Image (tube, rainbow, N blue to C red):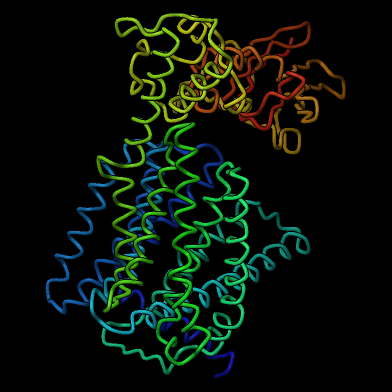
Length: 574
């Protein structure tokens, strides 16, 4: 088939996907428009826009799952399936996306995983055969789409670059990001959906891809076998020395287990025909179990010392899932591999939305640690915290790490015994000592911004400029002949009149008092406009600067570095 037929094939693929998955195409288009509007805004978008982008992204797998579920049932009431998915999307938006924080973001990512898994297994739930071959088809379609999308984006980027450099037509950097978004959420989504098999399509092991066969049996399986031997050598070393590593075992074993599950899953159709696949799956599903137990012991040591946090919870619950998968493969006489993604989706749901979710268990664990440390040091009397500056440095560090854990999740109100409206600047007042840093990262970054849609008072000034530290001085068409420049290396704003400097301001020195005042929550602080206003005057100029937003960090020498800022300048010449 010639090159001339490619546009026709792509057009046909788009028509097929839009006709089959119309609602998915609509939400994908909505996501594209929303993301491009965020880029064009060139500053932090409003909360509502961020929430809309997230819910449109989540709507893609939800609407896909609804359509495939309808195709499986062969019922006429498709609108009921779409209506149910729309109700689910709206409900999620108002219940779980009220705000964007650690918990809502974690749930958003996890829910996407759940519905992409549903999209994968719903056509084959539960006893339908050749689910592995269907999954290989989906995987190969994904990789084909990824390659086409990468080539398309590279070609379009080359065209934009050529227009910019050869024709002298300025191409803004944002256009490259917008092009990528269009390639992914318009081209890639629709092209991939055109490759999704229909419910009536049949698969058999006779069409198992030869390249995939070679990859699994002659590359991946030997590598996993060697890795298994290394892990067992390491396992015996630990048993002999009784020196357990700090969390390393958990990650090594967990990712190895996930990859092994994928290999065993994909080799299922051909394992009876290929000896290396047969013996590998027969042996690996048994000898991996002690390694997973070793992972549990390692995590138990960590949890005993530092309590449960969300990452440790995820390792434990994922470990339980992989352990159960291998037990199922060992002891079940009839194996339905559709249960693998189904059970994984249920595991993710448990970890995010149930009373035993990662958030609830972690907060309970850290609260108990906090309470035990206070009781141990006689700092808890009649339910109130008592100062004790003489406790050990180790316990000071543990208390500090627990407090920073709750601060990062904006949930001091969930930590029992703390006074109302507590923040980290009150450590000495409440506990009798400052926060210790050996168990916590130093909070050196900051981001301050003014409230959205705040009126700007320009009374008493003749000129107004809206600019930023990125391009100030490159384009500065103001009628007063005053030219402003920003020296990024020194964080200094300069003003020139007829090549003579009439004003300079060290922006870092003006921001440092704000950092010192708000550093406990410096990554997410919305400040009043009055706090972000700088007013200066000399014999040449009267100037007022309002920082719309500003970000940066505290260097090791205690100086402030400005990474970027958007601001308004109002001034009058004398």
